[in-house]
Amino acid sequence: MKHRPIKKILIANRGEIAVRIIRTCRELGIQTVAVFSEADRTMPHVLLADEAYLIGPPPSAESYLRSDILIEVAGKSKADAIHPGYGFLSEKAQFSRLVSDSGLIFIGPSPEAVTMMGDKTEARKLMMEAGVPVVPGTKDPISAPAEAAAFASEHGYPVLIKAAAGGGGKGMRVVAEEAELPSAFRAAKSEALASFGDGRIFVEKYLAEPRHVEFQILADAHGSVVHLGERECSIQRRHQKIIEESPSVIVDEAMRKRMGEAAVMAAQACGYVNAGTVEFLVDRDRKFYFLEMNTRLQVEHPVTELRTGIDLVAEQIRVARHEPLGYTQSDIRMNGHAIECRIYAEDPANSYMPSTGTILHLKPGQGPGVRDDRGVEAGNEISVYYDPMISKLVVWAGTREQALRRMIRALGEYEILGVATNIPLNLSILRHPDFVAGNFDTHFLALHPDILKTQRPDELEEMGAVAAALARSAPTLPEVNANSHQQSEDGRKWHRSRILGMQGGGRS
Image 1: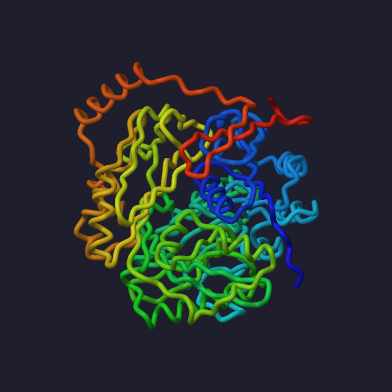
Image 2 (image 1 turned 90 degrees about the horizontal axis):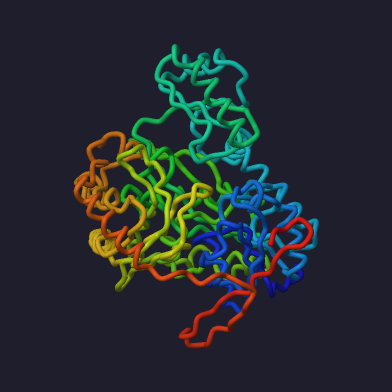
């Protein structure tokens, strides 16, 4: 298979994942092209890239989701490839196909693989044919509550109504009894249509005390597929992960071997190439079932990188160049324990309402074994337009106990003023006896509602007063313009990217 050179990559994303990709590209000697909306002019990914292009106003539908403008920017900047990151267009088969049809390299799986695994009902059928364990459920989408009732009468309540296309908890309803089915059916269908443009839904058995365990896989275009171990992602709010760790406390070597083999089988079944994640649900009897496959880089990929020493973004680029992996499953070594905490600008005690505003002060926890992946700095704004994640704080240590202590220490050092954050919530979870003992599932926060009461009003008032004082004395941020300054090798000089306005559909 012919090698495909990649000298310049357009990153069709923003925030911390764009920064993450830029850093690996810089190490590989690959030039980068950033894109930004009018709300993101001074964001770190814009300033860090070699080139940056304005692509539209703040709403993502008018900027980061404009595939036509992204392709236009790729041509204008003479990029060879596009990396989608996660979210936005990363799992849209039509976008990856458009990239390829435009003569560019899509750093991700084929449109066919994205389509197969993006449709939950089709993915379930494919996994059953491949011999991968699947949660009992309907093979095809259902068209009426009566079909869900028929399934529940056979398998028992509770059941889960889910969107056939999509994820992230959208279009999902737990049903405890038959009387709830009609309203749950309508709500799930409506939300699925609004979120994914696809109102198809299906029903499956709701597992008792489920744990969410996923396996990272890598596959090249030469037929090699390996897994890089598991990540435990059971600590969630509204079906969104908060804390991830590797390895899982419930997975022993024998179970890891079986689950890893199932993950590889899942990738092989859809002809998968590039990095992906096979997600499983594990019941209280430690039986595991295929949940879905995410056909992109995961938010929580750093925990796998810290345990394996493998740069997943670099591997994605190598695979996209048609290079072979160059190693087999027996070559993979996983060491120690890694934990990731997602730091959000939100108020957990107030229904996780996003906390918008300007970050007045930001100083991350540091020290041995600590990594902070973020896409914002002091002076940047958390806006209403995008996900309010500030950063991903990740630690590595020799054992889980040591990693927990290190994460608690690093979170305790993390300083953020100007917006509320979920740092106190993360600390409360990490210190909770059940979490420390590994006794938790995806219902952990629902079972421990008192854990949300993590800040006293007087503490919030004090923080607000300090933030206001800092705001009055904060220096004015430099205005982003068309100037370009090259960064010295030792990194002591400040680098400002070239900001290039779009013509013909772009905004200046």
